[in-house]
Amino acid sequence: MPILGIVNASKSNFRGVAGYFGGGTDSVSDLSGIDKITFPADTKTTLSATLTTDRRSMGGMANSTVAGYFGGGFNGGNLNGIDKITFPADTKTTLSATLTTASYFVGGMANSGTAGYFGGGFTASVSLSQIDKIAFPADTKTTLSATLSSLRRQLAGMANSGTAGYFGGGDDGAFISGIDKITFPADTKTTLSATLTTARQNLSAMADSGAI
Image (tube, rainbow, N blue to C red; front, side, top):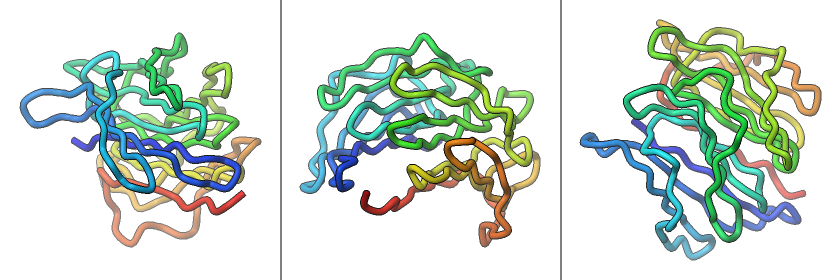
């Protein structure tokens, strides 16, 4: 099962600060540790803060220069909790807001400075198409009226911050090649005519949003 990563970058010119990898499994047990890669030297430290519970298959996203978030996951049961890592002290708190449905294999992406999104997932019996929105800085949760084009789990999410976020690939009983676009700030959903070269699940995604 993959671990999840989030990135903290300066919004003034997208000067990078650090990236974080959290949770996962080592095939023996689920993990709660968070590793930090500091830019530009790419040195690794391990945070004293940990996830609230050991967990794998969660979603991750970040409000750059402010905080990163890990949501959902699995540790013997489905999780709906969202942990917040506040920059630069890297302290951990757990939001009072939770995912609408406890689930794992969730995708995450963020419109930095405005809101983060967790989409899709799996409840162990059914895949999901819903998209939850965490509005910054209050960290309130709403569920979008827009949904993914199909039920899907094991998808990937990334964002062109300030413009749109994307959820791609996944599995709904068959592998998926489609890419859904959530346009900010209205949060409308369209489906790209472009598709992944190969229908796939368990993929990862990242974006170069460019300088501001």
